[in-house]
Image (tube, rainbow, N blue to C red; front, side, top):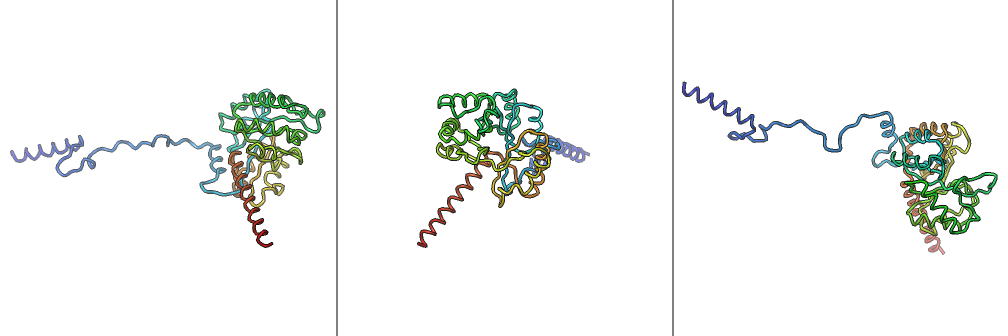
Length: 311
């Protein structure tokens, strides 16, 4: 009887120790401690997938994926906030060029910055067609002196917050004046801003002025909607007219905030993905273009060296 009672007491003591996680004999503490419920690591909480997020994941290149880099800028932002919201909803790194002194310039810049979009100052410049066609408020004109050009540019930059670069609005005449363009580039270089040449004239001196001042530079390859309508925009985005991007070379496209352009962009994204093309930020495009230029120069130097040895 005494022996039985001792056995029962020993069993009860054993289970009490197990419950408290206390080692008993050769039993490991890890084997008897209760496991707490599994928790997600900080910052790893899952979020529900929305249609926009799923589209973004489909459009985004996977790690290590290569393909033709395409950058897209939408010009003439600042008049209509509704179309800005619609464009910002496209799951792709589209950049936006905002005209200074438009009704919603600052508001659009703040909205797009909060949405993680890249912003440019869409800098008005004098065209050959002036005064029949006006570039708008804040334009740089060829009859301005150095002080006027610098002051007007500073005012325009102050009107559009969060800019990382500048591209020209109109400007077929001003873009041919390398001396005045150099003044613009000097101001951009002080601020670490890049310049995108919209190529409104075949005689642009933008590249030369940028090289002289050390400003990062790119030039437009294709206008998406120089002809109006969805069909024309879709043809430019996906058809053979994109010939400047042959052999996987980077392509910079510029469009405008038209409903047909928005719809064409949405429909072009899955096609680009299927074809191995990828929409990139302007920062990435500038880096890629610089690398292409360095490789081309290196290839030219090697070719020149071979010619010299053959002489």
